[in-house]
Amino acid sequence: MTKQTLQVQGMSCNHCVNSIEGALQEIGAKGKVDLANNTVEISYDENMISFEAVKDAIEEQGYEVV
Image (cartoon, rainbow, N blue to C red; front, side, top):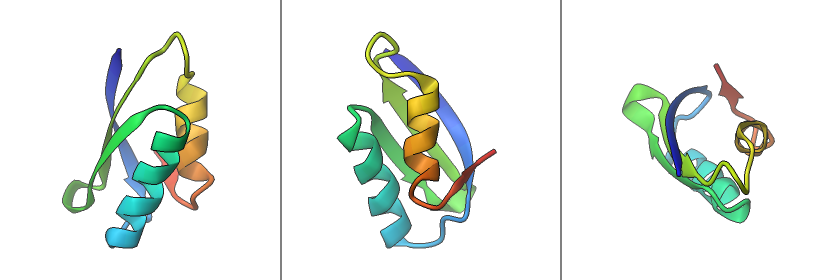
């Protein structure tokens, strides 16, 4: 299991939290959004999901991974 903390721009409310955490769940990853720090703590099985897929899932919701 890989764990990372990503800086994500554009998050500001609970809708943002639900969008990102839901998108990650759909691809089989887990995410915990921290609005105060503009971060998303993610964990995923690197044998099943690539980092690119995780990044794409977040960015497809309209947020920028930096």
